[in-house]
Image 1 (cartoon, rainbow, N blue to C red):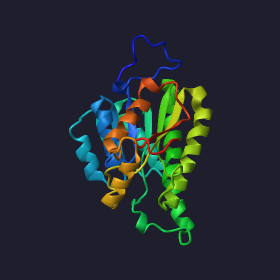
Image 2 (image 1 turned 45 degrees about the vertical axis):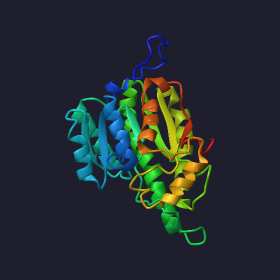
Image 3 (image 1 turned 180 degrees about the vertical axis):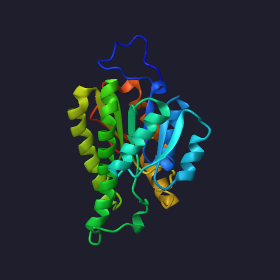
Image 4 (image 1 turned 135 degrees about the vertical axis):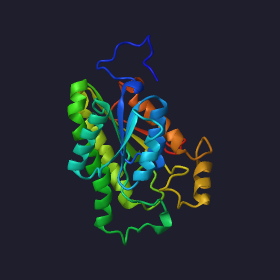
Length: 267
């Protein structure tokens, strides 16, 4: 993707994808892998963050020498996040220009197995908040010095359509993603004068990732029948929307939540 030649000059310089260093947290498996692959396809250099998927991350990076690096870090730990950014700078001799906050603390999308309202405890909420909100806070703050040097930056937070359409009892996960949307909008207002855009992309159930592998086929089919496109969004389709928000084409968009679910939910 390149900036159209007829377009007016942006208020801040937004590099094309081929000139960017992009961090994808949880970038080795599931949706994160699809996002990483899409960015590499478009020429970006990618930092593939992982916590427990070292082999998958290294295998994903291996065919792209000089353009992909696997870095282990727990995004909930600020010191590990700082070390991740230092490793990325050393690898690419350039700061991270876009952060994709995709990492998900251990969670299985199986409604029958999730705790209902009368039995869930706050520890479950705390675990999801630490991944979604604390993780995003750590990566955004660690990215700011590089954003400031470049005069621009992109943050893309991965959300969910469940807080608009709570059809399954994922109480802890949904609450954490709703809080992440709040952070998206308040940080967009705070960081906009620094040339930083902050947006959220919210999917529904994706067909199929590691997290959604426990979902019965009948549930996928019911969701497909409820969408205008008569299909369940795939990780590859969702990743295409990430490309848009990372590219110069979205330079005037911030504080927004784009729902990418085949039209099931209208935000």
